[in-house]
Length: 133
Image (tube, rainbow, N blue to C red):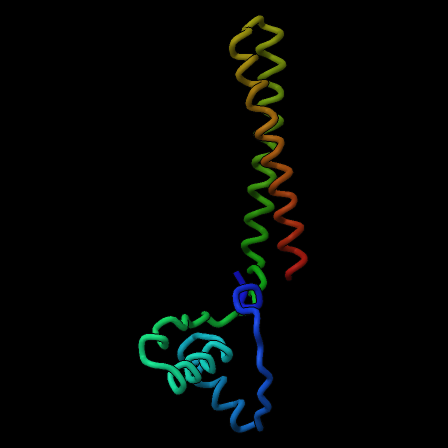
Protein backbone atom coordinates (compact mmCIF):
# COMPACT_ATOMS: atom_id res chain seq x y z
CA UNK A 1 0.00 0.00 0.00
CA UNK A 2 1.34 3.45 -0.86
CA UNK A 3 2.32 6.13 1.62
CA UNK A 4 -0.60 8.30 0.48
CA UNK A 5 -3.16 5.66 1.41
CA UNK A 6 -1.53 4.75 4.75
CA UNK A 7 -0.69 8.26 5.92
CA UNK A 8 -3.55 10.73 5.50
CA UNK A 9 -2.02 13.97 6.82
CA UNK A 10 0.73 15.98 5.18
CA UNK A 11 2.91 18.96 6.04
CA UNK A 12 4.69 21.15 3.50
CA UNK A 13 8.22 22.17 4.44
CA UNK A 14 10.26 24.44 2.19
CA UNK A 15 13.98 23.66 1.90
CA UNK A 16 16.88 25.21 0.10
CA UNK A 17 18.88 23.17 -2.43
CA UNK A 18 21.56 22.17 0.08
CA UNK A 19 19.07 20.94 2.69
CA UNK A 20 17.10 19.03 0.11
CA UNK A 21 20.24 17.39 -1.29
CA UNK A 22 21.38 16.44 2.21
CA UNK A 23 18.04 14.77 3.05
CA UNK A 24 17.74 12.92 -0.25
CA UNK A 25 21.36 11.71 -0.08
CA UNK A 26 20.89 10.35 3.44
CA UNK A 27 17.65 8.66 2.41
CA UNK A 28 19.28 7.14 -0.69
CA UNK A 29 22.14 5.77 1.42
CA UNK A 30 19.62 4.02 3.65
CA UNK A 31 17.45 2.95 0.67
CA UNK A 32 14.34 4.67 2.02
CA UNK A 33 12.24 7.57 0.80
CA UNK A 34 13.11 11.12 1.78
CA UNK A 35 9.67 11.46 3.39
CA UNK A 36 10.35 8.41 5.50
CA UNK A 37 13.69 9.82 6.66
CA UNK A 38 12.08 13.14 7.65
CA UNK A 39 9.34 11.28 9.58
CA UNK A 40 12.00 9.31 11.46
CA UNK A 41 13.91 12.47 12.33
CA UNK A 42 10.76 14.23 13.55
CA UNK A 43 9.64 11.23 15.59
CA UNK A 44 13.07 10.95 17.18
CA UNK A 45 13.23 14.65 18.03
CA UNK A 46 9.69 15.09 19.35
CA UNK A 47 8.69 11.77 20.92
CA UNK A 48 9.90 9.29 23.50
CA UNK A 49 12.05 6.50 22.11
CA UNK A 50 9.21 3.93 22.13
CA UNK A 51 7.18 6.06 19.69
CA UNK A 52 10.19 6.28 17.41
CA UNK A 53 10.05 2.50 17.03
CA UNK A 54 6.48 2.81 15.63
CA UNK A 55 7.66 4.91 12.67
CA UNK A 56 8.33 2.41 9.91
CA UNK A 57 10.69 3.43 7.11
CA UNK A 58 9.40 3.15 3.57
CA UNK A 59 11.73 1.61 0.99
CA UNK A 60 12.83 3.92 -1.77
CA UNK A 61 10.99 3.69 -5.06
CA UNK A 62 12.96 2.71 -8.11
CA UNK A 63 11.69 3.40 -11.58
CA UNK A 64 11.05 0.28 -13.60
CA UNK A 65 13.84 -0.63 -15.91
CA UNK A 66 12.88 -1.65 -19.42
CA UNK A 67 13.25 -5.34 -20.22
CA UNK A 68 16.37 -6.47 -21.97
CA UNK A 69 15.88 -7.14 -25.70
CA UNK A 70 17.07 -10.72 -25.29
CA UNK A 71 14.24 -11.37 -22.81
CA UNK A 72 11.69 -10.22 -25.38
CA UNK A 73 13.30 -12.48 -27.99
CA UNK A 74 13.05 -15.41 -25.58
CA UNK A 75 9.42 -14.53 -24.98
CA UNK A 76 8.78 -14.56 -28.76
CA UNK A 77 10.34 -18.03 -28.97
CA UNK A 78 8.30 -19.28 -26.03
CA UNK A 79 5.13 -17.91 -27.60
CA UNK A 80 5.91 -19.58 -30.93
CA UNK A 81 6.69 -22.90 -29.24
CA UNK A 82 3.46 -22.72 -27.28
CA UNK A 83 1.50 -21.92 -30.45
CA UNK A 84 3.13 -24.90 -32.19
CA UNK A 85 2.20 -27.07 -29.22
CA UNK A 86 -1.38 -25.84 -29.56
CA UNK A 87 -1.39 -26.74 -33.26
CA UNK A 88 0.05 -30.19 -32.55
CA UNK A 89 -2.55 -30.75 -29.87
CA UNK A 90 -5.32 -29.82 -32.32
CA UNK A 91 -3.92 -32.30 -34.86
CA UNK A 92 -3.71 -34.97 -32.13
CA UNK A 93 -7.33 -34.31 -31.14
CA UNK A 94 -8.45 -34.64 -34.76
CA UNK A 95 -6.48 -37.87 -35.27
CA UNK A 96 -7.71 -39.49 -32.04
CA UNK A 97 -11.32 -38.62 -32.92
CA UNK A 98 -10.92 -40.08 -36.42
CA UNK A 99 -9.32 -43.25 -35.05
CA UNK A 100 -12.05 -43.68 -32.44
CA UNK A 101 -9.89 -43.14 -29.34
CA UNK A 102 -12.59 -41.44 -27.31
CA UNK A 103 -10.68 -41.08 -24.02
CA UNK A 104 -7.54 -39.68 -25.67
CA UNK A 105 -9.66 -37.29 -27.72
CA UNK A 106 -11.47 -36.04 -24.60
CA UNK A 107 -8.16 -35.46 -22.80
CA UNK A 108 -6.76 -33.50 -25.76
CA UNK A 109 -9.92 -31.39 -25.94
CA UNK A 110 -9.66 -30.63 -22.20
CA UNK A 111 -6.09 -29.37 -22.64
CA UNK A 112 -6.74 -27.15 -25.67
CA UNK A 113 -8.41 -24.18 -23.90
CA UNK A 114 -5.53 -23.88 -21.42
CA UNK A 115 -2.88 -24.03 -24.14
CA UNK A 116 -4.76 -21.45 -26.23
CA UNK A 117 -5.06 -19.20 -23.19
CA UNK A 118 -1.32 -19.55 -22.56
CA UNK A 119 -0.63 -18.30 -26.10
CA UNK A 120 -2.94 -15.32 -25.52
CA UNK A 121 -1.30 -14.57 -22.17
CA UNK A 122 2.14 -14.63 -23.77
CA UNK A 123 0.89 -12.22 -26.47
CA UNK A 124 -0.44 -9.87 -23.78
CA UNK A 125 2.81 -10.02 -21.85
CA UNK A 126 4.83 -9.33 -25.00
CA UNK A 127 2.73 -6.25 -25.80
CA UNK A 128 3.15 -4.92 -22.26
CA UNK A 129 6.90 -5.44 -22.34
CA UNK A 130 7.22 -3.79 -25.74
CA UNK A 131 5.43 -0.68 -24.42
CA UNK A 132 8.13 -0.29 -21.76
CA UNK A 133 11.08 -0.51 -24.15
